[in-house]
Image: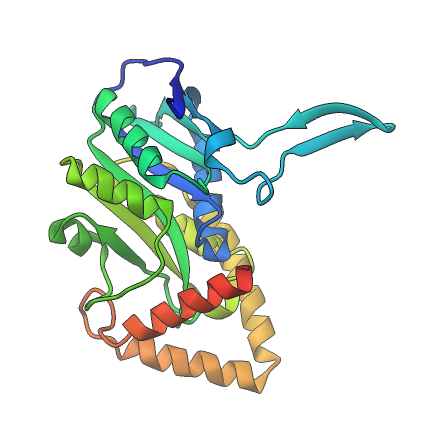
Length: 283
């Protein structure tokens, strides 16, 4: 039984496939906000929908019941869809948006690969954000999970070997990479102490990385302005606590001592620990 339905196949010239699934690691709402900015900036249409009845656990992602004066008017089910459009410069893009599947990840990955091949996708770009031991007083940086060293070096990466929990996005990256389609996950590093609040700088950085790596243009100006306001707010909050001020100074010293390489070589264990702590807090 097919887990997706193809509605339309408009002509697209070598589109990039951008993946932003809800429900996985998204510190500071970095990926979610970046995806919302994309959807607002790019006029798009639904070209395929997935069978959420077989892919989702509705007890975890319950449909929304609308009541008016005690009368049940409608039931709004979660949707997982593939949308197609063009950015302001005419570059073709496919956007896979909606909740991360709870079930059938292998079948889901195979279906997305099938659609990617049908639309002649040139590359997959995933969006995400994770909590990291970095201060808000220094520019945020991206880290990559890529299908090749060349792609990883274009963005930056955490050196060494890491074993971390994976999401459905990782399964998609691996499936398309195995089929010869370049794949990369863009991950914004968010200060661990700001991971539970909106952190617009992460979203702006993801959009800028999307343009640099995939040639998809979505303005980040509004997000950059919001990032300035968030930084000022964090400055005020930190200034009110000597403990927090000392923590930020320590993080600043650590970042300032980094080599000119992609990311600090000693950060792997810290990053893994922050990700695991973030997941526990979410649960």
